[in-house]
Length: 305
Image (cartoon, rainbow, N blue to C red):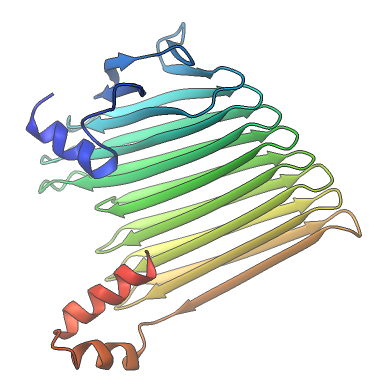
């Protein structure tokens, strides 16, 4: 990997991995380096279009990195990754994609990730998206995530779109069984004429199933964001979905909530807020010596923190 590759990796994860950590680094549609260990195995799918990650039962603390980088203009990369998380295991998964496109053709990455999380397992999943480059070719990222949570399992998912992504369609589907918990935190920043669309479809299938989704976004310039969520509760379950957005300039944000209770004991809540940077916040920071632009940047940084 060259210095450009390492810079991209540093934005979404790291270009150096600790000795006890497993990893698979994908560049321009191909795996370029891989490491496994006694409790995490990574295998290439038979059709070569993705990988299977296996975490053994009772793993105390496994860490695996699966970053993707694209530096080839005009490439459309599609990858299918399946995560098989054994019973009673604990694992941290660091994923994401960085695109560098200095030319005129579009560069695109579609990551299709499926999680099969067995009973009492615990997963922390972090996904970062970033794009850069002076060319007018678009930088497109479309993550699709399917989560299957077994009895009393849990997953925390942090999804961040840092900057530079021209267009993204983000789909997350989840099935949550008895006693299982899913927590999702999403942060998105768009500018210029960028577009970001997010769809959450969650089905709480068992007694005691719990879900909490928090989406925080900032849309500036002439960008557009859309947030849709559908939460269905079949049993004695709980879900809370919150969508908060700040808009400025000529940006637009659309939030569409839907909750469907199929049981009298299902407790489902959805909240949405779209606002602007408050004048009092700007004045307070500007009184400390910051310019208006610097004050806005600090407010946005704090909102997405």
